[in-house]
Length: 220
Picture 1 (cartoon, rainbow, N blue to C red):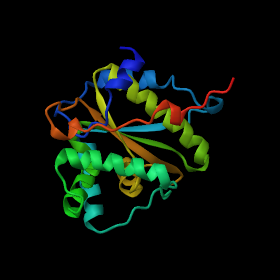
Picture 2: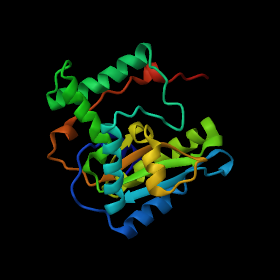
Picture 3: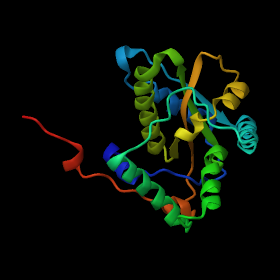
Picture 4: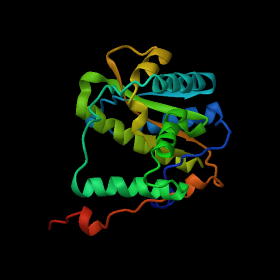
């Protein structure tokens, strides 16, 4: 499938079938993702793929963390507050999601429960945490973004769906504990993936894209 076709069809999937991807297929996909470009070819990504029992343990740990009332303590700066048009787009995305689910703007409990689904991996059979050495800072984050996009496109080519999740970087301690990661390794964000449940209402959500006239400037 052409990349343009994949991009036109792809959406953030938030409901998955209980159907694990064969291990050999996973290895093939992640081997192909190693071809992603990076600054000076440093390849800073260290992807941690969780499935089966490990994923279930992490899900439980996340739920315990949330129930304890813990506040997010990300390894990297996730505290940027959107302003202006960026805030409008953020609200537009949330409105598209909650409107699809029939959740009213003032129904805070329902919105919180929808948010919690992030840390349940949307019941996907697999998730990947994008990690890197903390000292790499913004340069490493750029490379991880390129890697994650590359991986997402390869997954789509194999008939798999995904959802990029900044939320999976909000509580790094359970991840570091379960996966036995060193303290100098940071969890930037994550992505749940698997076979989409095409009948799930939440997977009908679609968001708008900005016009090229507002996003791109051509200089001759």
